[in-house]
Image (tube, rainbow, N blue to C red; front, top):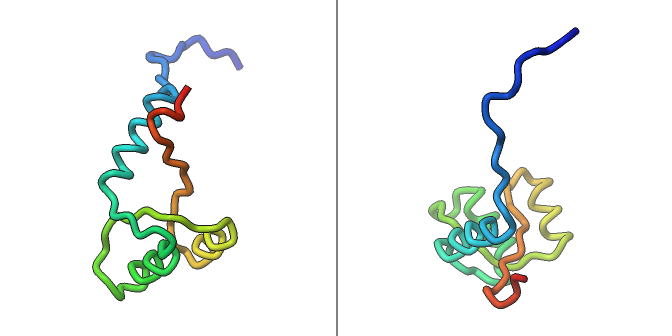
Length: 85
């Protein structure tokens, strides 16, 4: 098979700095529940409290447990501006 068509547009991949800005924006809009993150994520998932965007801290094991329960979480480091090179 021969393909003669070229892609019409190239896909733009955001740079690290742009991705960091997006993560920081999302983090600022979420309630920081700290180390209670796994507990709050479960409470939201099981409709015990109103749904809202949260952020916090979870160990690798806690994150794996949440994912296995079907709770969607996005492990992402949120770095301060001075940590970006």
